[in-house]
Image (cartoon, rainbow, N blue to C red; front, side):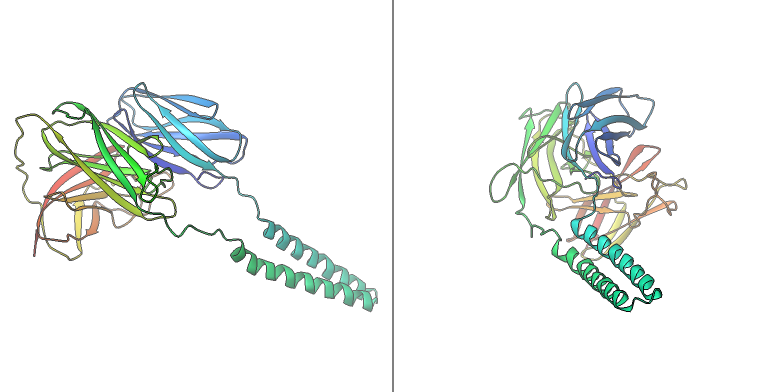
Length: 385
């Protein structure tokens, strides 16, 4: 939702570029809609057409310049809208809603009641001063009644007028497919999740923005040597897509984090195989050793200059067990940030608290942003009983 006092931030991975789309506050309708594309390194030379309704603009990303690219569009009315991002090869449709706050009817009655009460009391005082006792008593009585009525409405109406929330929706089901259907190492692969409602089987069209994205997709190779954390494009109702180059043969695992409106978050997953030869075995050493089933805090040194906020957080740690049956995603313990997106009150270390359900070998990838560059640091964890 975008309003006079709220921005909407949505991460998107489009044409190989990692962006955060910021739909800025909209002070009035009809009026301007300010949109920023925040580009993270590595930035490709890329042209992106940005449009909403009949209003369109173009953003040209430059390889040498990460950071913010603004565009100004226009909206004519409040209500549901769709922001379209389009490159020569990909497009994404981001639903959002424009709202301009207006006082509720009960607020108008309350303010009017208190205003009328003030006038009646003032008139009563004047009448009393002029020795018109009956008139003063009558006006004062009406004033007291107005105050009581206004106060009662002020207390009761917000509860009566509160929206009735949906108690929850069924979990969504995710179906993974890839193009080409039998990719080989070095191919560009389109990874597609079709999300359907668990009760009706219809495409899900009510994904909520959570942690600054409609969906978070983590793709890893079975051996843990390949890792991508991307934000797939919404190409149609219930369909999310991303492209990447699978650079090694073997089994790949995909974990999609989504959240539906008025429902909790959930994880859907799938896998696909990449053909080829020459796969090297992992030689990474164990970084940490932890006990199973107990909360532990992982500390990562990022340097004295600190980090920028990304996806609303100072840092992310994504974990997976060796078999691929467990996947976790936790955030840095302190999440305070300033209005310009720079994380505040952080020293040279990021701290993550998590736990591991069973003994075994786990992979972990710690991510943070410095100077608009997304840094990913892989680790291997040994979990003991």
